[in-house]
Image (cartoon, rainbow, N blue to C red; front, side, top):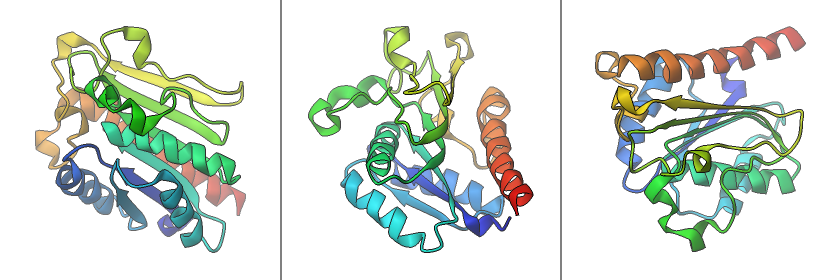
Length: 204
């Protein structure tokens, strides 16, 4: 499958646009993914969802949503809107989407831990030493499926690893990536993207 047929949408959190551009946009471009968009955590989720559908005229793109910090909340919210529009999400990734990001409850107005039915697989990454992006109550960090067919995983970095909010999303340059983040987060996302490519190739 051409990597153009894999649509990746990134969502940055509060004051993190440049961070996502410098890290995730650069990183994905090096992997050969050019069909990548970046949105913030404030725009209307409905408008974003409609733009995603409008840009997929062929209706053959596999959609991946990746949200960092409050952008993780936005990614889930966009997935919910896409569910109402009967549009599938192959992979949803949330990174450090918790903690102080919950200070705007009126903005979110929903449970960001409940994954909508249209999402096939979700990976939720958080670090227990990240006070900005993780909740004090351990269970509040865990995502939940809406049906038995969904595949969800909560990937937790222990507090002893001392991985902070920025470190959890740093993926460029390679020499500055925390070795545990590289092993359990970066490599895992790479693997999932490759899996989606391979499954589409076998279906052709």
